[in-house]
Image 1 (cartoon, helix red, strand yellow):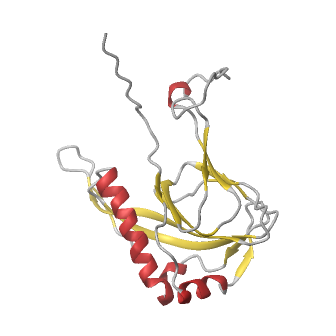
Image 2 (image 1 turned 180 degrees about the vertical axis):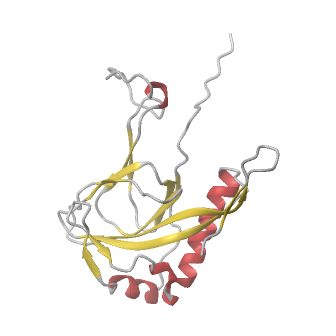
Length: 207
């Protein structure tokens, strides 16, 4: 007997450890960004500037993120359409603060770069594909990628994570006395889509 299990409807989560280190100029710019208390809960702080990667000091960093996004889109998902980073920000979690559950609107793929992290886990929350239309609270014998409702990812400094923006996620409490700092970005696609044959032509320009 031959058996084959195919995990349809998977969520593409890209994790790049040791992505790169910030240069002294980049790090100094990051820690001196003007901040405000985030309104999303958790008592963490977010940069007032929501386009930090447009700053001259982050020019090379943006290029690195754009290359990683292109690798995710073209090489992994095999999508030929172009994607661009549309907004970017930083957040800071002092001790005993956390990042509340949220997703990213007006974005297709999002990325998070963990600059400083000594405490905390990223948890992604989703509905198992096999139970979307009729949800029982099943008794699970052993959790795996097929039956789980969430996935916990241990964080490391200089780790980059890219995922679909609709996936809800949160980061646990920072138990360390050192601030946890991240740089986040959203992306969107642009160009020409569809065809005359399927009568669904669409052109999107990002300006």
